[in-house]
Length: 234
Image 1 (spheres, rainbow, N blue to C red):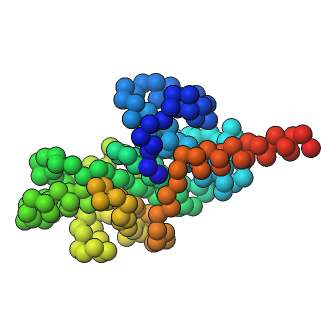
Image 2: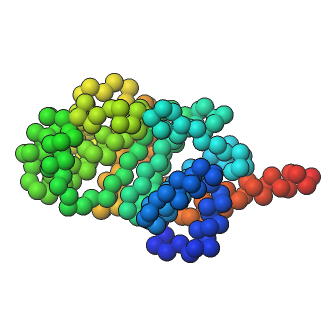
Image 3: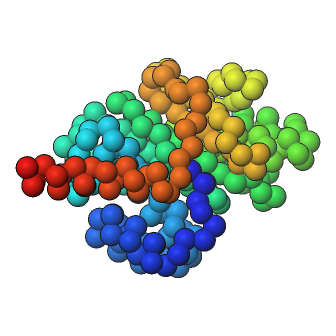
């Protein structure tokens, strides 16, 4: 979903009450208001999907983390998810198998230098033979693809970016080295200024992206809170 440009303070406070105390503390440590909004909305986006899928109250949702910091939902072992945010966008992917997603805003950074430092020799060679415009786009293609893989396996910084190679053969064909065979990749067009890549342990990607807004997300969360109140009264 695209983050609203202006979230009023009273609404932000109201939305913050829907996340855990641990998440609130994490948000307090963030200095940038945009980072706070992205973190909050990412959490709410996942909560709304869990409420909708399992018909449970938001208050019942508790996140736990592995040693590398990858989150899971306590007591729901078949629900896997991943969240990413950059600039104006917050995105997520869910499945009953391991998944990862990464979105990055394309900007005029020193991508060539970063590629030399973080990418494999094969990847750096491919970028070296491109013109400046191609380099920027291909850099973000590879960066998001590689990040989506690392987030899928849930090992974070324990897996160096240059320990495996990814090559974009064409618009839809992606090859790789030093990655197990049961990993699959897909890229989506969400915004001309962004690159979005997903990875999964099954080749079962949705064909299209579902774009939601903050009000729909909140309505879903409140809907199941209201149902619980009605059942309690019955």
